Amino acid sequence: MTLTRPPTEVTDASGPARRPAIGRAVALLALLAVAALIPLLGPRAALDGTGEAAAPGAGGIALLRGVLFAALCVPAGELFAARLARRVPGAPLAVAPRSWAPFAAAAGFVAALGLASVVATGNMLPGRLSDMDLGGLYQTRDGKLALLEVNAFVVVGLCALYRRPGLQVWPLAAVAVAESLRAHPTTEYSPLVGSGLTLVHVICAALWTGGLLHVLRMLRAWGPSDAGAALLGLYARVAAVLFAALTATGTWSALRRMPPSTVLDQLTTTAYGRTLLAKLLLVAAVAALALSARLRLRRATDPLSADSPARAEVVALGLVVVVSGVLTALPPPIRW
Image (cartoon, rainbow, N blue to C red; front, side):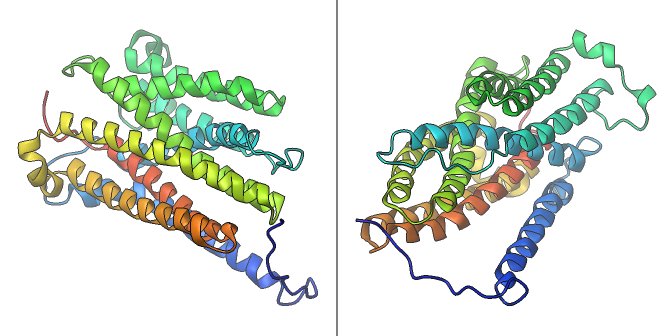
């Protein structure tokens, strides 16, 4: 049995057939504009009325972190989705969408380089080159982690350009480890526990977000087929496990920063809490969309109709990544 969809009307290239493509391009540009404005304006909005002060250039730092997280998700998701596809019987593996890993690696390199320059100026945005102490990066923990991320994205890009996707696992893992260590300074209580939670959280988020993006791209390349429905169903089952791990590690990490007795108060009175609340609402929306897609996979006559809520899900996941960038640029809600 082959799953098919009603044929679409074909018209002249200069006529109405171009309108959907133009509409998608406009929608994509609008989403990118919103995604850029959230980190730039988010810290200021979150801090309003809290009495807290953010580091100089928090908006720029949030934007760079959001780009870095997205750059981690794309190649990790491609590797994850390709591995799932190999488990689908009859999958047309020879038909694959063009890899976005080189572009993601370039964006990640620029973002990591920008964050390294911030570390080189004492965690402040540099005004000129003379403000940066590049040699000092090798003498501090944060500086070494920043350089590790820069070099890791260079390696990811080289692996993608020379068609060695399997080797990307190691530099991508290095970025995830660096982020987990950076997020938890040695002065924090039980920093290794926090780093372990963050590492699992980052890996699961990258696989969930990037994996769904590439699965949808593969479905579009394959066209209506049983293999496409099987791949989407396989991804949905694995995504349920990733969601459970994300929920557990995210909750534990939040409780380490905000003790249970203060959570409700800090969710509305601190910048970190407000941004975390926004992230939780987005994750709840993502979970609802994922559930809708799963129900369509089980009950719909055409299981591939589940790609509609899945596309909305990947957009919502993109917003979660952006808000996560804002979260890293805000002052922690409690003092260690």
